[in-house]
Image 1: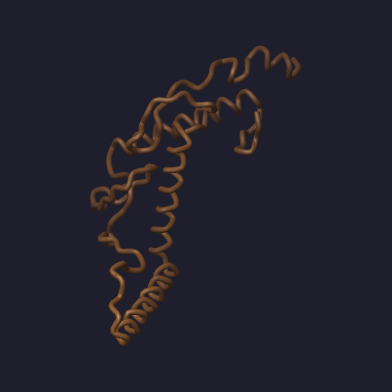
Image 2: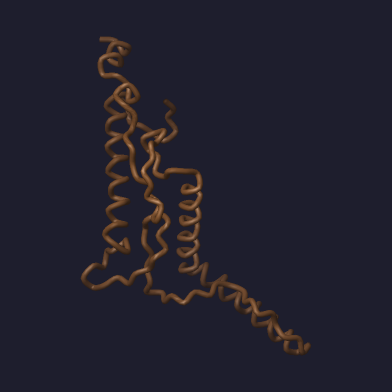
Length: 169
């Protein structure tokens, strides 16, 4: 049986049917949408941009918690204190705005892993591996990962090789 016969018998993913409607992964959006490809997670480019901003904010938090981030923050605070001292010596009041990051959270605050969720939580001894603020956030991301795993398996069966992100249809 040649490859053309095998494709016509099993059919392509598009011939079998497009991916069904799904919910947007971004928290507080969760709209139903018809995806253009099976691995799409967000309903619009606006939601995708919001998720990208969330990812960047999480990366910034991780960096600020690292030794290099703390070192740079200390240097930044030192420069700020020097400027304040210079302002006081000249009898000029400093501006009301401050430099740096002014967060009221403690270092024991952890952040939800669902894109768009900015809620913090404290891990307890009962659940030291907690990664989400609530069961709904955990279930939303779990639903997406299970669906993507299923699509990768289907594409592997149809094409006969392991699917990669750079493969084109």
